[in-house]
Length: 107
Image (cartoon, rainbow, N blue to C red; front, side, top):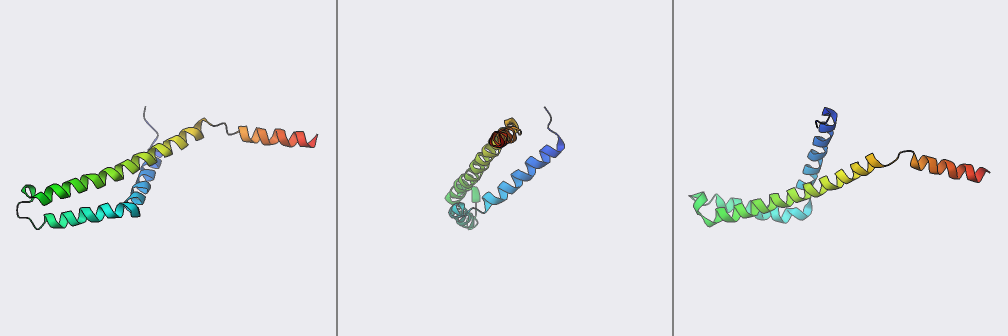
């Protein structure tokens, strides 16, 4: 099933917004600093792929990306659940309930 282009654009904009917000979350700052330090240590080696600093940087890099991807996934699940609930809810249920209560009080 192909989604309409406006829907794909809306999803892409939401993904971009959430990605930017996750990149600046303060609780991930510690891991980014560790990754940056490991990267700087890596550039001090002559043969990057054979030094232990490369393995350390690679581990920290993958861990940091994993945390970001986990948060993207969870936010996507939340957004998807909200969208499903909004699409399944009856927009007239609240209006009908309010109108029937109003008409009862007028009688």
